[in-house]
Amino acid sequence: MRRFLPFLVPVLFVASSCSTTSTSAADDAKRFLADAEDKLNTLNVESQRGDWVHENFITDDTEALGAKGDQRLIDEQVKDAKEAAKFDKQKLAPEMARKMELLKNGLVLAAPADPKESEEVTRIAASLDGAYGRGKYCPERLKKTQKPCLDIEDITRIMATSRDPKELLDAWTGWHSISPPMRKDFTRFVQLANKGATELGFKDTGAMWRSKYDMAPDDFARELDRLWDQVRPLYLSLHAYVRAKLHEKYGDVVPANGPIPAHLLGNIWAQDWTNVYKLVAPPNADPGYDLTQILKSRNTQPLDMVRYGEGFFKSLGFAPLPETFWQRSLFVKPRDRDVVCHASAWDIDNQDDLRIKMCIEINAEDFTTVHHELGHNFYQRAYKSQPALFRDSANDGFHEAIGDTIALSVTPEYLVKLGFLKQPPDASKDIGLLLNKALEKIAFLPFGLMIDQWRWKVFSGEIPPEKYNEAWWDLRLKYQGVAPPVARSETDFDPGAKYHVAADVPYMRYFLADILQFQFHRALAKEAGCPAPGSNTPLNRCSIYESKAAGDKLNSMLQMGLSKPWQEALYTISGQREMDASAIRDYFKPLEDWLNEQNAGKPVGW
Image (cartoon, rainbow, N blue to C red):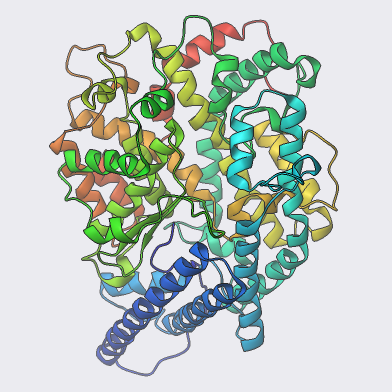
């Protein structure tokens, strides 16, 4: 996703002494903020346009142009961050004080002050992004065919559909072969990014990233541990059950007691296990329908997928998307060029030029992804009337959570209203539905947590370059209980095979989103009257579709943007000021009880 101030970073400068009166200081601060917001808004639009062109037309020239626009924006952000620090000891009105803090905590990448190094780090960032987008695996067996190479879309399809362990291993190792050439540039990138962060007063770039959550960096790290502890028992139960079923399918390739090989979970990064549902589903627990087959049988087209997503938000009372959205978005992979197919939502002008960029496939996964990306767009439009520095989500996890909250309402009852089903499956089918959902949501949680755990340690120096790959797999084992299918070494650079690492996109937002979406869903479902008083309707069967009351509550939070601490935004939608993973356990309670029964007497953990 691309947003206002896309490169966010904290600053802890000691304020310089100031002899001006409090009144003149307030006037100076007001003038500074007005000028900064105007310049940043202009540069952000230029950067967005350059990045849009680069990701849709990947060439050396567009890469250079995109990097130049990003550099101008980053240079201005760094300059404004330093200037904002000069007002640290001044007593300012609350709104002005918050804007100063956001300027100091507004970067993901802090370029060094040296112009050559600033140009170098932004060029490397664009090069790594482009290298991922151009990534292809060219197996010997395809060299004489019309399409001798496989891109990430091809690899994704193989991982999702093949049940041949040899083919899966070939695809897995093939895609991970694109990233070793990134290693040298990534190492240099870390050095330069850290130099920029320390120039702003931070210990390193990781500390900078953790400082943007309206709480101390160490407190934020402890908060993540608390949330993971809340959900870890459910993950362990799911892992043990899936491992046992895959052991039945693949024999000793999957150990009865130990980590699961990463190539057998239906996803190139083993972050989403829904594609192995049919291998692990118990008898008579089929969800009762196959959304992918329903979409294909209806001859659903890519634009239809987007119209369904828009229709959900319209049913809550939101206005339709602007016509320019349909004219300027990228919905289908072009045949004539390389593009970054990773789905993303864009707010080009911080007003109404909303777009998505994705290579839509007609399947259940992309049906959900469309809802997710449109969640960004409707959030972006909701806060467009805020001052420029407040045009963002309450924290980055909120932005990711909104669309997924809507997707949780894609229930059988909702599909009936769309005409996809004649009637919802009986409640006895819920174990299948919940298991399928858990393979997406619960399986993702440890992966969502470990990506930035790895980068924070890289930035701090705890993980040196000569141990990048070893530490990557140590963390994947610790959190996910997965292992590489073949021996890995430091000649590999497996982190670079993940888009967000190559593209320098912080990842903790996705872990937070996985927590928040269930908390949001529980609160909005209650607002929509589900479950009804005296009803036994479980939380997983609640949909807020067509609930204007839920839409009003949602919109009241979205419109706040970044104007208040995230704790206040959370209170607006949920009545709580603390993130709470108990909503996940509530949602999956029937499944968790069932999993524990299935795992009785079997090893749990690794």
